[in-house]
Image (cartoon, rainbow, N blue to C red; front, side, top):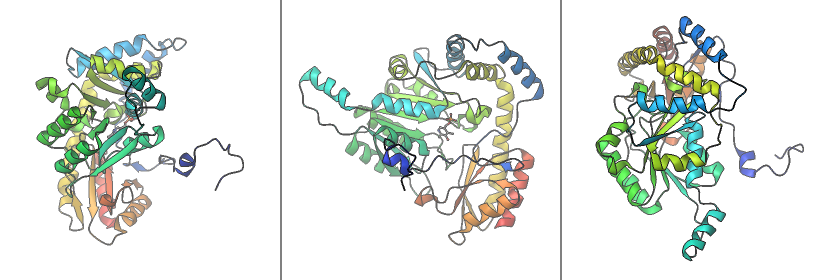
Length: 386
Ligand SMILES: *Cc1c(COP(=O)(O)O)cnc(C)c1O
């Protein structure tokens, strides 16, 4: 397996990994595989953004734009006044930063031991998340050397609250990720279950991350809980991204946390992780939030149209979604989803076959909501493929 050109230094588990699948040649395809906003920036805004970016001081390290962006995000989304913001190069980077902030390395454990004289053995720090969920939680754990505990969802993809509480009591995880709503299932968790799980995480000294990547398409945000019950949520980080809203190419993630917690997370952040161009684009998007909100409204209406349409189909089970994607399960033979994916691709429509991502996703496809025309073409391709 080992290539003779590869230095022996590269980790065995990295060698054994498969790279994160990024679709390469998609020109000419209707691309409904990655939860991107299908609407390009309107032409007038493209021009305006071009002029704005031309004036940015690219010879200087980021500072001014990122500071302004943090302020604008807190104001625009109504973060509590006592809260801080941390920016990431996409929320993917924030996941890595959060894991880094809780990872107890050998030197860190020695320091803790020196402080109180208590011997420390070195159990790995733990990330816990329901499964199936976003794959990057597990990937960050593996790459940084944390232990990952996955707790299966129920058959309807709701949280298994009892199993979560039991796993939290048993493993006392440092970090618990709750994608709200979940990817790839689109499920929104029940508020009361979330509250009890978040309380249990806090009682064990852990942090909970409510990952709101799909907030623009969801009817709820945990920020409302944070504001209503601040003390119960002091150990909660609300993480977002501008990717699904329409800036996937810009790479801009952010999180809200108490100022004290945000300050600690910020210490492990590479100082210039968000470029002046990312930040200026994100500022621009916030100034034109109405345009993106309108697109999100269209996407939500289209989501409802697809759900209603596919719910009639005898060969499909449609799971209710609060994201800009819909998970469907094929009721036929075990390779039906794989075959449908291939047949749709042959008709120029790219969706995501998630069948092999997790046993609970067997025979499932994840359909990103596109423009009305794209969705009509997708529905026709899917039905003919079945
Ligand atoms: C897409 C996604 C992200 C990552 O978004 P980026 O900001 O583009 O890195 C994070 N969490 C969930 C649940 C996602 O689906």
